Image (tube, rainbow, N blue to C red):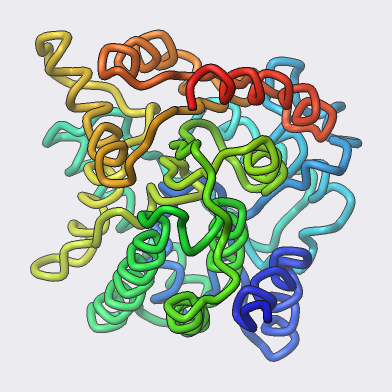
Amino acid sequence: MPSEALTKVERIYQDRSNRAKALKKNGRKIFGYFCGLTPVELITAAGIVPFEITGKIKESTGEADAYLEAIACNYLRNCLGRALRGEYSFLDGLVIPHACDILVKLYDIWKYNVKPPYAHFINTPHTRSNPSHQFFRAELGTFKISLEKLIGREITEKELRVSIALHNKNRALVRQLYEFRKPNPPLVLGSEVLKIISAVLSLPVDESNELLKELIRELKERKDRPQNKPGRLLIYGSKLDNAELIEMIEASGAHVVMDDLCFGYRPFAYDVETKGDPLKNIGDHYLDKIPCPRFCADTVVAHQADLQARFGHLLDYAKDYNINGVIIQIITYCDPYAFDLPELREFFKTAGLPVLVLEHDYTMLAIQRLKTQVQAFLEITV
């Protein structure tokens, strides 16, 4: 019998906005946001539901092609197309951090053409120096004031601490879920995990926590566990918010047992510090604890030390999850990940891990074309 919780996840995944729309009808405000660098703790503390915006790989970019230049990635183009068609009309606000240059442009395009009732841009530093931390603490203070003007009251320190605790619980539950990927065979498929993350990032954090608890209880007793496969892969790279790529890899004969994705493990890997100034702790977390390629070193260090600082955690994942191959998936024109690719590929090869690079344009046709590459990679490596 299929898990009731996984059935619920599948239902949410197929219509992510359903719960948000129901909450809106009951008077809750819903804020759409992009990127795991968005400080969702502040949104929750304001009594607003954070909702991570996603694309639909089976849909065309539509009208968005008229607003974004050709070198903009199809993921953001797809999301804008959905918004222009009214699919995100239920959102009461938009929050975008400075994750990449195209996202900065998208903020203005979305604000001008979609006209959300509220919009805020967070200027996230690219370095992690002390001045960057001080600047970002002030930037979060500005965001907090903006939210307070919207809701008509102060966001108290207690509310911030409660929100941090709720989101830390969310992170801990996701980390517990990922433990089920360590056995051979895993207790939960990589495609199922992606759908779980998709559901988690569409719900109020308290509801998300209850869903994760239900999943963990059921997975512990799972009878219809996945079949054993020789391939145990780590997937890394650009935004991956649709399950089709991982489902294709699974159908080709491997399990994706770990990821380092911004729509995966990365935002949940570490907790926000609970002692001291809540705003400073939130800022420190998003600057220091999320290993995104959009960050750059603010001091000159030896090359090998730099590689270890940027990618060393991936070898820890490879050891902990018994990885025997790596897939790096990059959306065409995703510059931050493309810039890292030569060094990252060499880093994995030096560690003795086979690497396959898959570049795609965030369409179903591209995913289908990659199948032969995946099958050939698995034949050689596992």
